[in-house]
Amino acid sequence: MDDQNRYPHEPPAGPSGESSREMPAEPTHEISGEPGSGNEYTRPIPPYAHGAATRPIVGPFYGVPHTSATPTTSGRGPTNDIHSSLMASVDSPAWHLVKALDTLVADDGHTPAIDGWFEHVRPLTDRQKQLIAQGVAKQDEAAVKKSLGIRHWAFDENFLTSQQRLASQPTVNIQGLVGGYTGPGGKTVLPGRVEAKIDLRLVPDMTKDEAVTKLKAHLAKRGFGDIEVNVSGGYGPTQTDENSVLIRAQQAALTKAAIDYAMSARSAGSWPGVVFTGPPAKLAAGQIGIGRGSGAHAPNEWFLIDSSNPKIAGFDQGAMFYIDFLYELAGAARR
Image (cartoon, rainbow, N blue to C red):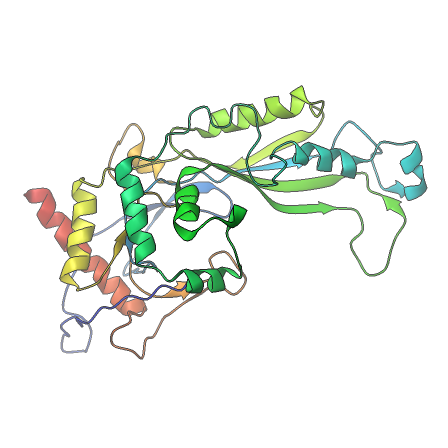
């Protein structure tokens, strides 16, 4: 969705016109991840690197693991593409995979139906529901729907219920299907190999290993054990207490910048926050940022670099806000 932040305070400029403020610490490494693949990595930070985020929201968060799997047909049907007339006497890998995928969700085409999928799902607390309601009150539902290109929420639920579902429900999503002939016109072929890319969004207290194990067991139980499940990445959920020093410092930085914000009880985006919150570190972790952007993971994803409106943060203002936040965090940690 489009996010807009008001940041009326310009940083004091030095002789060259650049900000005279400096960071209270020199970051040396970035521990991050690629949400599109569910991978995490650690890398050195180049000198003078800076960046900005896009949403006026502050933790606590849960980071959904992007547990990516590629179910691939194997063991049934031909080893290569053959004439489609043989569908009468040869197993079809395409239909075999489609039937297998159909068992992963209920008849509504939405609710996960993997055996035991909700076994360890931690329900939302009353406080989390309150935070979600506060966030919904600050948003324009029509604008949100327009940015997503939708006209209604799943099951025709209202905005509040849909956002509670977003924060509380694990998912089974098909990213894409590949196989056979998809060019112009027709081609009488029975494909010998078909693949589906799926991602499994988890919530506390689910784990990546648990999800993969249950997926494979579910398929095997229904006669689809011959389907290969290749896991390409993923990590576990994470959540941070809103009363932690980190989250309080984020709130204080936004307040000092006169930015109205919403606290996110749980964020449905994937990120490897468990690197920080899990053992052995067991630290607080959350996300914060100002700016404007839209189209996450889409070909037309964008972020505002130079702002002509002094009340809307561009890239440089977003970077300076992080310096303000780091000072706030340093001060809070000493108190």
